[in-house]
Image 1 (cartoon, rainbow, N blue to C red):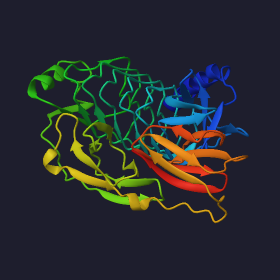
Image 2: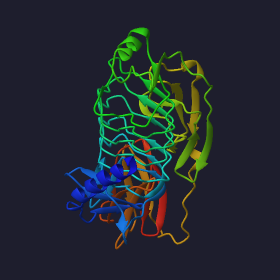
Image 3: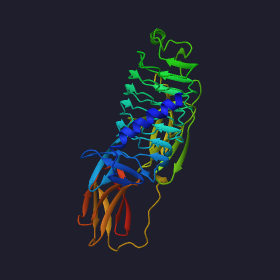
Image 4: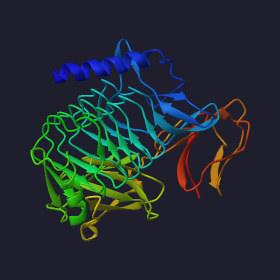
Amino acid sequence: MRKIHYIWMLTALLMCCAGIARAQDIEANGIFYNIISESQVEVAPAYFDGANHYEGCIILPEKVYCDGVNYDVAAIAPRAFWRSAVTEVQIPNSVTMIGEAAFADAEDLTDITLPLGLRAVSRYMLAGTAISNIVLPEGVTDVAMGAFEDCSRLRTIFLPMTLQRIGDRAFGYCSNLTEIYSDAATPPQLSGDPFEGCDNVSVMLPDRATTLRYQDNDTWGDEDIFSLWIDEGLAVLPTMQQEHLGQNWTALTLGNSLAYRIYGPDGYLIAVTAADRYFLPIGAQSTDYLVVPTTLMYDEEDLQLVATAETDAIEEIKDEQEEPNLIITGLDGTIYIGGDTHGLWTFIYDVYGNLWYERPAVNNWISLPGQRVYVVKVGKTVRKVFLN
């Protein structure tokens, strides 16, 4: 009866959304986008022949280029990856909105890293997926109805301090749910039965005062569903392995059902994730990232790890049919092109394959954001340029 109800609700939602579907505006590196403002795009579905064609590991970019504009990837459209064959998804921090049922029934999806700017988890967003651990980033206040319903492999949830409300069946029938780490000092308000079909779930809380507040709550204090504990730190040691993936990425294999804070070389937080793998971009210089195990309540800084993205993973790009007498250099945020460019086109990519510039080679200089590597192609001549 429960499964029928879930499918009926999701089908109704999709039928309501069907009327606003439209052709995608941009396609880049196998991902489709709709333009939603002068400077922003949203990730769009890839429906062809009655099926969603997204598959495998998806690392979404922060920006996408089209017709002279570098758009921010700001949102993921409703049902964008619904019933797709994606397995891992890493969402950039430029995304602040993820639509309803965006990943629903993507039955092969085991890992996802949510963006730090997310403020709400939408209805049925990850329902019916195969995720095993999930961190909701700080700033999320609402988890909507059915958001994780029927995630039968979900074991561990990390809830942020900011969480205020959890909707009906948000975690319904997550039959393997074992533990919840909640940093919310005030018990989140519960609508309907968010944990329908769950039992014997351990809830880790930051201190005794918070534990007493949860005990006084009708649902959180239900001993048939939850047992409440004070968090005392990690029960297992963190592990990390590193693997280069082609010329653009290095993968950190994390695991152990833990959460991790990942800090960039400037010390700023770039991700909080409980995914088995996190992907780091390879830039112009070898870059160290700090990886700190966390329960959200406590960071285990004594167990922190360092990951390095090595520049030698970027392969040199060669072309044996270059135009003669072309000079391509970079200085102070500007790429300079010298020589005979008549009749040639210029294409400029970053090392992740994102197109930044596409024009006939009529200008001999192009200004772009610095501190990164670009691949410049003028006619058949290809050069890699670092802009300082």
